[in-house]
Length: 151
Image (cartoon, rainbow, N blue to C red; front, side, top):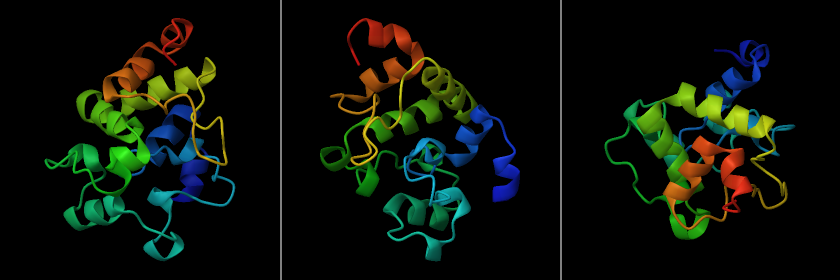
């Protein structure tokens, strides 16, 4: 898919097409105004191509959700550095599929659950959880989880 074809898609389809190999959702990133994201950028266009992109390229995988070694704990999946959000995203995709993940993320955004509330630190409602199950609960239950004070 070209970037021009991507631009013509609806929100849910854009989310699905923009999920980076590590689980980041480039469509919802606060850097979107000047970055096309991993799936539409060449190695040369990305400043610090992460371990996950390089690894998936080498293994010819679309993302870590296809990898038998997930979670590897490297780079973007280092929980002590990046939290549990991406581990939860990739696990959710692995267990439920990219389409279901994209539908839930789009629905949650429509209901006020924000990917990046703080564009400077790249944090939002999916961040700050202590385990992946809590993030998966937010993905699946959305607004109900926020109402109950978990997010």
